[in-house]
Length: 123
Image (cartoon, rainbow, N blue to C red; front, top):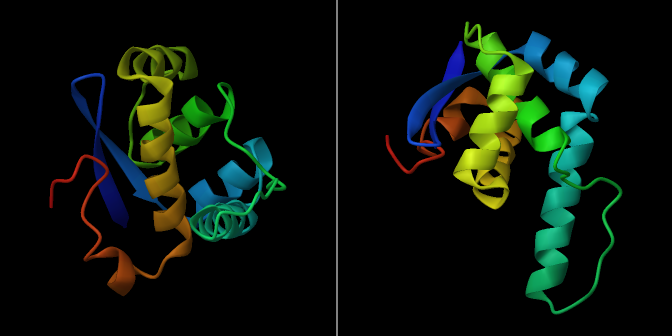
């Protein structure tokens, strides 16, 4: 099982990238493949100085859900409410980065993900 470790509100949290977690993300907030594709297109358009309205966007509600799914897949017993508090305490923009890295881990092969590091920059 692939995992990433992220710093969230001064607490290390582990998120597991599993097929089941991918399905849970798809049911809760949207298909991870679509989300990551939209993130990539948006980044490319921003680099080119073009405006792009993605088909999917991060929200205050879906960032903690994504992180919670990853934590639960790694065996955490934290509730969604606890993760929402952690995400808010950490800063929602920073928590979005954790969710982004986790989504990328869900759709990236293990060999590619191995060199990417962790959400907090640790190896």
